[in-house]
Amino acid sequence: MSTPGALRATPGATSPGVRPITVPAGSLTLSALIAEPAGPPRATVVAVPGGGTGAGYFDGQAHPDISLLALGARLGYTMISVDRPGYGLSAAQAPSGQTLAEQSAALRHALAHLAGRYRTGAGVFLLAHSFGGKLALTYAADEPDPAAPRLLGLDISGLGRDYAVDPGVLDDPHQHGQWKRNWGALRFYPPDTFTKAAAVVAPMPVRERAEARNWPLRFAAAAGRVRVPVRLTFAERELWWRHDEDAVADLTSRFTEAPVVRVDRQPGAGHNISLGWAARSYHLKALAFFEECRTRLAEGRATTEGRQP
Image 1 (cartoon, rainbow, N blue to C red):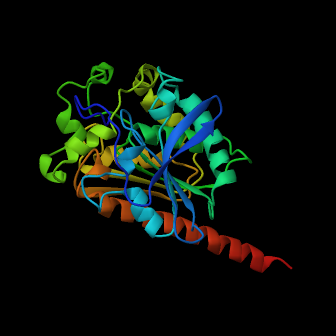
Image 2 (image 1 turned 90 degrees about the vertical axis):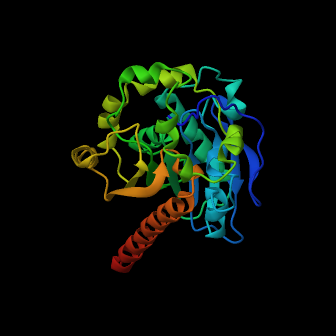
């Protein structure tokens, strides 16, 4: 749900310390961006962009404060933003995209490869936006793969269960008239945002778009199988999803197995939070949540070890 009208992808710059990599993912090869910390990583954050956007969404170039990848690496995390199947390098291999189940399998292969090649620290957090959040929840609901690094938590923005739009809108590949739903207000974004954003936008694959209508049912099936901490963020002007008090209460009640479920609001932001002035604030909150999860895990291990004879 992130496609900004008529923008089209062109090669883009990256922040200092951020570089492109390729990642084997089963039958596909995915493109990605990586930023590594100076020392051993606390953990690894894999960022999963939304529909119609590529890995560069999390390395915004309109202002130095916006890049999640650069910020996270400075704070001691290995940061990876991956093009989902059907985007970037894999667009030629899978021009119609993949279903959520297929994307989840590809992500599992990708994470296993990353764990074998890069330092991952305590494990992996998934930070996802919009359609990427659908993939993150689908992945977390699947049975753990011993070859993949341990999943420690999820932080998802721009995703609910129930749409706040007529389902027919989801069938428009160009999202005519949806500018406000995608962006909110011009004042939320630095100058040149829409010029720079052209480098991260791509058409939403057909098979992926077909998945969108079924999300309310898929969410109900996935949420109850998620067993890691979850944080959901809704922008001040989130217009794609219902996030009123009743909707949020119902949303959180579905995570019956998650040890922590938190819902936050991000003021001064539209749907594409990570490209706006609010990006740094949101990213710091997400990384703080991950640090809480990492600390809780470390404390749990210490308690268990202390009980051993």
